[in-house]
Amino acid sequence: MRTKFAVLALLGVFLFAGVAGAAEPSPFHIGIMTGTLSQSEDSLRGAELMIQKYGDVNKGGRVVHVTYPDSFMAEMETTISQITGLADDPEMKVIVVNEAIPGTAEAFRRVREKRPDILLLAGSAQEDPAVITSAADLAIIPDDISRGYTIPLGAQKMGAKTFVHISFPRHMSYETLGRRRAIMEEACKDLGIQFVFETAPDPTSDVGVAGAQQFILEKMPAWIEKYGKDTAFFCTNDAHTEPLLKRIAEQGGYFVEADLPSPLMGYPGALGIDLSQERGNWPAILKKVEEAVEKAGGKGRMGTWAFSYGYTTTVALTEFGKRVVEGNAKADNMGDLIGCFNAFTPGAKWNASYYTDAGTGVSNKKMVMVRQDTYVLGKGYLGVADVEVPEKYFKVTR
Image 1 (tube, one colour):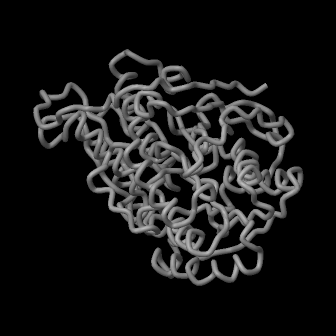
Image 2 (image 1 turned 90 degrees about the vertical axis):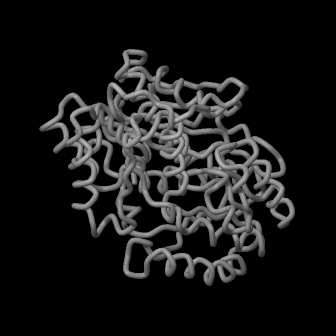
């Protein structure tokens, strides 16, 4: 049986207020690596919050933040050297990488060789579970196994009759993403929804982010005409999300949630939403995005998570690492981990479980899968966090 841990975050004020500039000299440091603003804004904003809360190392605080290159597949050694470079700081005790792109496991292995005292935490791990957990103390991924069922279920609840999955070979080679795609196809069959797979350019290829986004902008009208306005679209890449949302708002279709869900994932750019005054205030961000979606005619057709997955994972893992080093949490305690997710997501409902290998049925206690309830803009929560996913889907392989 899978080990499950369902939680309901308490309503309340944000717990992350803090003054960074006045931080006392830190007894230990925390390194955070995220993507850049163009590829992984939410994860990066989470790092900024942690600097605000615990201070910049250069100003006597705890946190140092670095980013990996946009072309991370071609510049893997750069990523590895940046991570291992964090371990050169003798006061470094925690390293958080979110997203844990390919190369993270190798970097963690090198860190482990020279600094076994550093806690290594991987968010949104993109390497195979056995690979990343052989090097990391803990890895977090979206619960793509359960979401392989709950996203098509959400699409059905919203009114979709066709489900279009958009991706490219690199992502489909990843264990969890390839397995989720297979589960989605199986779930669509069971739910009476047509499943379609479409290929789009990889933003890390020669076409770049701009070329990949232009492809989606140009293809979406044809896809909507071909499959109909009662079609739900899902893409596996952040860069594809903005143009996808733009065309859905303009021309019809459904969008349950992003690969890494967030009110900031694609919506501001797609709908021209200025959120500069709401920065860091997730209820205010959600409200403004919801108003823009309703104005654009997308009420009830477009969804997200109320709190960003990328943002929450960065801050939760950083907080968790800090608590572990301070002796206020245990590295192998799921309750302590989810407590850190709760601290930054008042009112949100989470479900968490350990990753289970489909072939062996063995749970990996170093890889935790998390999911948050889907929020349909203009309607509210779908209630899918409470859904008991049929056991058969946990045995589906890619």
